[in-house]
Image (cartoon, rainbow, N blue to C red):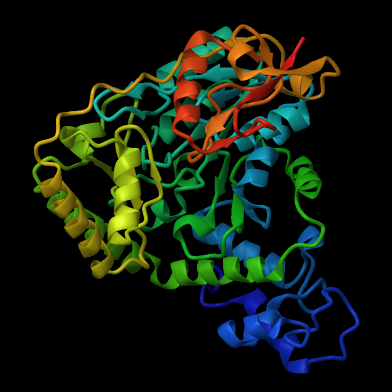
Length: 485
């Protein structure tokens, strides 16, 4: 057992800072001395001493043998992995590495249709041939559900040469699949189970939450530690617990996608977040759950407002368990879309939520929230409900479109020399050279290499018409798109 009270990278940087050598290395700001005085006046000076480069004392992420290695080993033990690597390019690079370590050069890999766009990037980098699998849709709330073991088994029966399966669990909305059963199916076919666990690093610290992916048998789990467990934005981890994963290849692939100038500020924040979770995580996550459960109960007592419960979702649409720290809130009974509700909460009540869809808004509750935060949210919802109590219920949401026709691989489309730009209004029936993903949550509705269908076009046209935020196309206004002839 390692001593989880230790903070090896933080301690190494503090020791280096105490020496204050004459500094002739990158970065050029020389601690606080080269920083804009206006910034220093606001934030103080100490943090700038953490922005270092590779020195004999503070180790090297790409060949870790000292403080960084020790910090990664502590994280691996805490989350139950064989080994762990810090990620300074976010979970994006972790998902890329998971995909290209599992399958490349025409080998098959199964990707869910609710995968983050980073999985697509992995397909482009490695050239694997995707086999797509669609999560079920929960109709009442309009949410994408889970991937079931039965779906996975059917996929492997039809594609016995598939090298692995990726699942998103928990999703943005806190929806999980049965990872233990998926691991059983994958391993019976000699395949790797990759879990995009960007939203689930906290699930290892309470038996009241869905269990963590590594603990349930996943081979690879990628976590955005910054999302809910206290590190800085863009800092993540990839955990591996498997004999199926080629460790040397995975580490080589990390060199391919990670910065050669990794941020010591980000890595230190990972070290310190791990320490905080190790020493106080159980208490902190229980506190977040208590706040979320209390808020959920109060929201559901407001006429016209609804907040999704375990009873609403678990056991439906492939949903295994619900992370109750995610509050999915709907005012559809009052005639309000999620987009309108989110905008109203921010503009009129100074309450900022994570995302909105047609029917819902999403509030993420973490251990750092206070009761006052939840009170403001509940009180704002109650006030809105009074103002719109005579509203007519929303009509049903447009269903997510069916998977478009697969024509060529994402890599073939991305690197094709036969691309041209056409009007958005004319792209139906064409093979796309760009993916298109409303953001958040950043899930592509059409991938490179797929043929634009009427359903996908009409769905995206609604997003475009309301000026929704879109990732993927080079013309984000969607006036034009790139297609492959």
